[in-house]
Length: 308
Ligand code: NAP
Image (cartoon, rainbow, N blue to C red; front, side):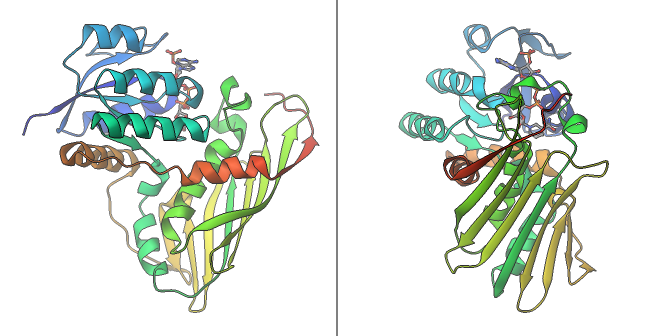
């Protein structure tokens, strides 16, 4: 079958760590070009902007966007206007209205828009979802804590409006929660801890309820270390499920569950390929909705200034 020709836009940490290796390993895609203001990728044609790339490369079928959320809306708009299928890194927008607008553009043009959530493709997530589907769930506790200096060095955008602060990693946990729990969840309350010199929170505590009233307690913290803690514990009438290591390890009552071997980004690109071939969209803004609600209902506490 003919390869899908793609371009990758915004060559930074996640593009180099994950997107480029995942694309290179998938024979169904051909990376033709990249666009980045300050970076280039060997072996493909490079452009400083997406406009220049679209002008020079009319044959490209699909565009994967891995810049931070704020500039991505304009990039996605341009790519869809030019008739390209689009994959968005997480979060799919700097705000919710962007996601709805892009979804409508893609629908009207018959293009594939994929709001990717890489953590949903972690090894244990589907097995957790399957087990929980038949369980009587009593309580959920999310602990998603890491050292911001280790995971986001020099990323000034993350502290600006639209950068999400601690919700940048925290939204990964919410993407898993909204995938594995059998019922929808809604925000009940939130506390946002914002450094005196920053716009976005360095820590946050959320309380959610599912539609049966089950409590989902969420703790996000960027002041944690040296070992990161990315885990979701679900207590049920029959036992306790623990998804740890960002969703890549699963135990039920402390017994290890054997998992598959296809990792997050290869699985993301495989899913995007299938969506394009089936002419379908996959747009799910629920994790971003919870983040927006956390800001809407958020009680703001000012904490110690953060200096990197
Ligand atoms: P990053 O390295 O700071 O940024 C990616 C690249 O985007 C930058 O190197 C920059 O390249 C370009 N860019 C930055 N600001 C721009 C602007 N205003 N306009 C146009 N291009 C701009 O960030 P990242 O860590 O890769 O994160 C990017 C996205 O991936 C975020 O949404 C993040 O949540 C997600 N993500 C990150 C990780 C991670 O571990 N870092 C993991 C999963 C997902 P040029 O200067 O060359 O244009």
